[in-house]
Length: 236
Image (cartoon, rainbow, N blue to C red):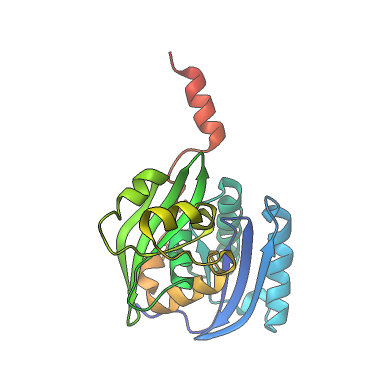
């Protein structure tokens, strides 16, 4: 399928660094990056408004919305998903979604080398996925999964390791270097940027098309902390 050719809004709030971007065709018209921690719910709409005004557009101009599909912060992922759903419902526009790990990898793509995108899941657990990029093609080396850090590093022992990117890779930088000798992308370059979602939409639109936005849900990979505590409380 062909990607949208007109104005498109991109949203990602899966980590403490959120972003909003507006693009049209292969042009990036505006991007806003926010270091807001857990405050995405109050920061996202003003950021959208600012990006749209900076691009000289109004909501009715939008032809599509693309959103980061997680994993990451449960609240942050839900905020972006709900906002994207509301906008496409109001406009009757198509919706696209790409995983945040894929967006991190796309923003950190290195020629001839795969990228392992890593998000912190606490207590030495991580969310991770690995991708390779070649001549405008995206190949999934392994899909998003929840790992212990030891299990993730164990996947690459005895191989040529990928480039590591994302907040989880930065957090465990020393261990990744010690165990695998692999390069780790600096934190500022390893966030799931909304502009990377626009690039993915231009490159592989068929992978991101959401058939039914009303029923679509993001990728959480595991239950929330509150849900895990509740489940543990009812076990015999």
